[in-house]
Length: 129
Image 1: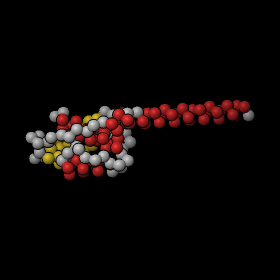
Image 2 (image 1 turned 90 degrees about the horizontal axis):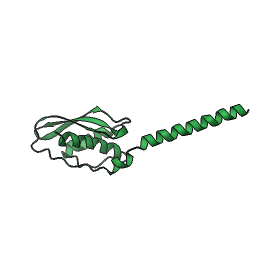
Image 3 (image 1 turned 45 degrees about the horizontal axis):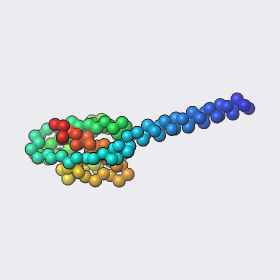
Image 4 (image 1 turned 90 degrees about the vertical axis):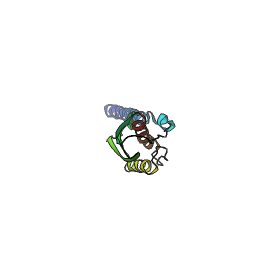
């Protein structure tokens, strides 16, 4: 009986340890990205082409391609997505950016960090040309 209790106790301890490690890993960088400022980008004068941008934000790291035609953002494509993408968020953010022709758009409620990660990649693509 002692052996069964000991095994059960060790199993519970391992599960708790793994849960804590996963929780800490999932939250790393969360506050920094929430506080991150997204700068507006002036696309006037930009040449037509595809601009690559990325954001290194741990599990929110991503890489995008932003296409410019006629000094307008015409499409945004994901090259490497974040670790755990939220369904439909990328499309909503990209559509807002294309509609407003700006990175100064509202983040998606409930997906602030994910929205900001995508927006920072777009900003980086257009600023670091």
